[in-house]
Length: 216
Image (tube, rainbow, N blue to C red):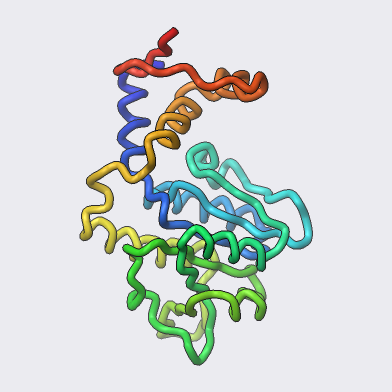
């Protein structure tokens, strides 16, 4: 790995936000999921979660994601209940993009707290079960004839508001990943094939030098 490549990877990883994530519920259109992943990469989201109650496969279109699936971890769940429970156990507050009487303007949320944004299926939105289990509902005010945005566009609007708040709070000015996760991730990003071989053998990754070279 060239030193300039290593430097770029570190710059990106230094700004990753482990306590900001997206949870999608039955977002099956690959174009939409890939676009969401691309936006997550752009705002520094470290990992996202996807629920698919109809299939174990979460498809993405690489031409839309443009490689961002390599930089954003994707965790899949078979049930929305267990996904929400897991995120709550990890300390996240979950806000569903959902039109209801309780919904508030998405800009009223404090995204500097550990936050997960729940986005529902393209046609139906989030399920009633999900809506009842989250910490709140948010909406993007519409001033035209349409009632809502495309799910990937809505994700971008909300995530960039989260980014704005976190930039103002200085969250991108310091490394926020724990040391172990950081070292594992930088190795996997820089040496994906070698990392895969070590995982197959059950071996730890070797350390990296100051310019990204493998030591030992």
